[in-house]
Amino acid sequence: MIPEPGRALTDLAMRLLLTIAPQTANTFAAADSLLVGQLMLTLSQEFERAIATRMQDIDELRELLAHAPVSHASSLPARAQFATATPASLHLRDVNHLHDEGMRLLIELHSEVELTDADLNLRIWHFLRAHSERHKFD
Image (cartoon, helix red, strand yellow):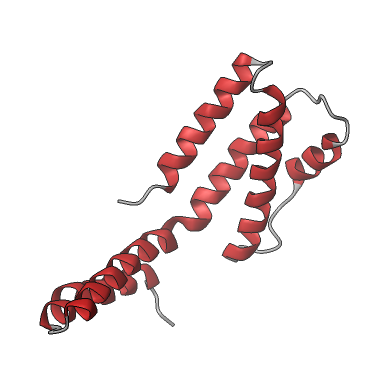
Protein backbone atom coordinates (compact mmCIF):
# COMPACT_ATOMS: atom_id res chain seq x y z
CA MET A 1 0.00 0.00 0.00
CA ILE A 2 1.16 3.52 -0.77
CA PRO A 3 -0.52 5.68 1.90
CA GLU A 4 0.05 9.01 0.12
CA PRO A 5 0.25 8.36 -3.63
CA GLY A 6 0.04 12.05 -4.51
CA ARG A 7 3.05 12.78 -2.32
CA ALA A 8 4.90 9.79 -3.81
CA LEU A 9 4.33 11.13 -7.33
CA THR A 10 5.57 14.55 -6.25
CA ASP A 11 8.70 13.06 -4.68
CA LEU A 12 9.44 11.01 -7.80
CA ALA A 13 8.89 14.03 -10.03
CA MET A 14 11.20 16.19 -7.96
CA ARG A 15 13.91 13.51 -8.09
CA LEU A 16 13.55 13.38 -11.86
CA LEU A 17 13.56 17.18 -12.20
CA LEU A 18 16.33 18.02 -9.73
CA THR A 19 18.62 15.00 -9.82
CA ILE A 20 18.28 12.98 -13.01
CA ALA A 21 17.46 15.61 -15.67
CA PRO A 22 20.42 17.91 -14.83
CA GLN A 23 22.85 14.97 -15.14
CA THR A 24 21.57 13.92 -18.54
CA ALA A 25 24.17 14.70 -21.21
CA ASN A 26 21.80 14.37 -24.15
CA THR A 27 19.80 17.61 -24.60
CA PHE A 28 16.71 15.81 -25.87
CA ALA A 29 16.76 13.32 -22.98
CA ALA A 30 17.21 16.15 -20.47
CA ALA A 31 14.28 18.10 -21.94
CA ASP A 32 12.18 14.93 -22.06
CA SER A 33 13.00 14.22 -18.39
CA LEU A 34 11.95 17.74 -17.44
CA LEU A 35 8.68 17.37 -19.34
CA VAL A 36 7.94 14.00 -17.73
CA GLY A 37 8.71 15.48 -14.31
CA GLN A 38 6.33 18.39 -14.87
CA LEU A 39 3.61 16.02 -16.06
CA MET A 40 4.13 13.88 -12.95
CA LEU A 41 3.67 16.96 -10.75
CA THR A 42 0.45 17.78 -12.60
CA LEU A 43 -0.72 14.17 -12.23
CA SER A 44 0.04 14.32 -8.52
CA GLN A 45 -2.14 17.41 -8.09
CA GLU A 46 -4.97 15.87 -10.10
CA PHE A 47 -4.70 12.62 -8.14
CA GLU A 48 -5.25 14.46 -4.87
CA ARG A 49 -8.33 16.39 -5.95
CA ALA A 50 -9.96 14.54 -8.86
CA ILE A 51 -12.95 13.02 -7.08
CA ALA A 52 -13.66 16.11 -4.94
CA THR A 53 -13.60 18.57 -7.85
CA ARG A 54 -15.77 16.41 -10.04
CA MET A 55 -18.31 15.80 -7.28
CA GLN A 56 -18.49 19.55 -6.62
CA ASP A 57 -19.08 20.08 -10.35
CA ILE A 58 -21.80 17.42 -10.29
CA ASP A 59 -23.56 19.10 -7.35
CA GLU A 60 -23.48 22.49 -9.11
CA LEU A 61 -24.61 20.95 -12.40
CA ARG A 62 -27.58 19.39 -10.64
CA GLU A 63 -28.55 22.78 -9.23
CA LEU A 64 -28.31 24.45 -12.65
CA LEU A 65 -30.23 21.72 -14.43
CA ALA A 66 -32.93 21.45 -11.76
CA HIS A 67 -34.03 25.06 -12.22
CA ALA A 68 -33.65 25.21 -15.98
CA PRO A 69 -36.60 25.45 -18.33
CA VAL A 70 -37.23 22.49 -20.55
CA SER A 71 -37.81 23.53 -24.12
CA HIS A 72 -37.27 20.04 -25.47
CA ALA A 73 -39.31 17.40 -23.68
CA SER A 74 -36.79 14.76 -24.73
CA SER A 75 -34.16 16.20 -22.37
CA LEU A 76 -36.38 16.03 -19.29
CA PRO A 77 -35.88 12.29 -18.56
CA ALA A 78 -32.10 12.64 -18.88
CA ARG A 79 -32.06 15.63 -16.52
CA ALA A 80 -34.29 13.84 -14.03
CA GLN A 81 -32.06 10.77 -14.13
CA PHE A 82 -28.93 12.89 -13.65
CA ALA A 83 -30.51 14.68 -10.67
CA THR A 84 -30.62 11.46 -8.66
CA ALA A 85 -27.79 9.45 -10.19
CA THR A 86 -24.75 8.43 -8.20
CA PRO A 87 -21.47 7.13 -9.56
CA ALA A 88 -21.28 3.34 -9.77
CA SER A 89 -18.27 3.61 -7.43
CA LEU A 90 -15.79 6.20 -6.25
CA HIS A 91 -13.30 5.06 -8.86
CA LEU A 92 -12.35 8.02 -11.02
CA ARG A 93 -13.64 6.36 -14.21
CA ASP A 94 -17.13 6.00 -12.67
CA VAL A 95 -17.19 9.55 -11.31
CA ASN A 96 -15.95 10.78 -14.72
CA HIS A 97 -18.83 8.95 -16.40
CA LEU A 98 -21.43 10.79 -14.30
CA HIS A 99 -19.54 14.09 -14.63
CA ASP A 100 -19.43 13.69 -18.41
CA GLU A 101 -23.20 13.15 -18.51
CA GLY A 102 -23.76 16.33 -16.51
CA MET A 103 -21.48 18.33 -18.78
CA ARG A 104 -23.27 16.93 -21.85
CA LEU A 105 -26.60 18.03 -20.41
CA LEU A 106 -25.16 21.46 -19.60
CA ILE A 107 -23.93 21.91 -23.16
CA GLU A 108 -27.35 20.93 -24.46
CA LEU A 109 -29.03 23.38 -22.08
CA HIS A 110 -26.60 26.17 -22.87
CA SER A 111 -27.24 25.81 -26.59
CA GLU A 112 -30.97 26.18 -25.86
CA VAL A 113 -30.80 29.26 -23.61
CA GLU A 114 -27.68 31.16 -24.65
CA LEU A 115 -29.63 33.70 -26.68
CA THR A 116 -33.01 33.48 -24.98
CA ASP A 117 -32.40 33.50 -21.21
CA ALA A 118 -29.75 36.03 -20.12
CA ASP A 119 -29.98 35.10 -16.44
CA LEU A 120 -29.48 31.37 -16.99
CA ASN A 121 -26.80 32.04 -19.58
CA LEU A 122 -24.92 34.10 -16.98
CA ARG A 123 -25.35 31.40 -14.32
CA ILE A 124 -23.93 28.84 -16.73
CA TRP A 125 -20.94 31.08 -17.44
CA HIS A 126 -20.41 31.49 -13.68
CA PHE A 127 -20.41 27.72 -13.32
CA LEU A 128 -17.93 27.35 -16.18
CA ARG A 129 -15.63 29.92 -14.58
CA ALA A 130 -15.80 28.16 -11.20
CA HIS A 131 -15.26 24.82 -12.95
CA SER A 132 -12.12 26.07 -14.72
CA GLU A 133 -10.76 27.58 -11.48
CA ARG A 134 -11.34 24.30 -9.62
CA HIS A 135 -9.60 22.28 -12.31
CA LYS A 136 -6.61 24.52 -13.07
CA PHE A 137 -3.14 23.39 -12.09
CA ASP A 138 -0.70 25.26 -9.90
